[in-house]
Length: 218
Ligand code: SF4
Image (cartoon, rainbow, N blue to C red; front, side, top):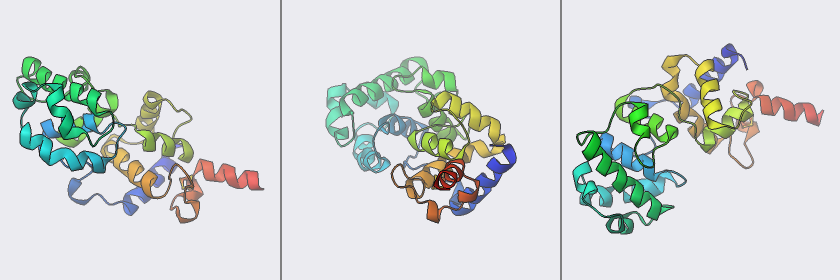
């Protein structure tokens, strides 16, 4: 897809999913620490489940120092409602300990430093940088972004790193902060994994997948 068409897709999605008050996060957080911990917990689980355990978790462990002093087994009951909670308990306690030991108790503000924390890959680092610090050096590629990008024709790849590079090449830098939010919103409502709602889609005329379907149908 050329940049002009991609930007038209972007304009239509932005009109459909307006960003109110700069809010692009599906997870409710107040501090960079909360953003980091909740984003680690959100892997392969729903945002609703993560938001549901938020208050209890931070009532017990409001700071990196408090969480660093906990044992993972003590944290597990508080996050039992989310997937893979045992390994995630180890990740968040390990991350808190590293924040205290290596970063003065603060969440670091570079993608390399964030990726050095347990449980933090490039996607998580991109999300925390963007949401907690307003720094956009990349685009977080999750399952919705991956599926929708391929269908629309933003990318031919299924590899998250390649997709991220393709998206960064297609869109101007000032749009990067919105792409993840727009594609997730769109992927949840319209371009769903099963039975995408082509008939309700505001970008069907620009969509590679839809054009291919119509061609096949003759
Ligand atoms: S036309 Fe269908 S496949 Fe293409 S973006 Fe819209 S919902 Fe997704």
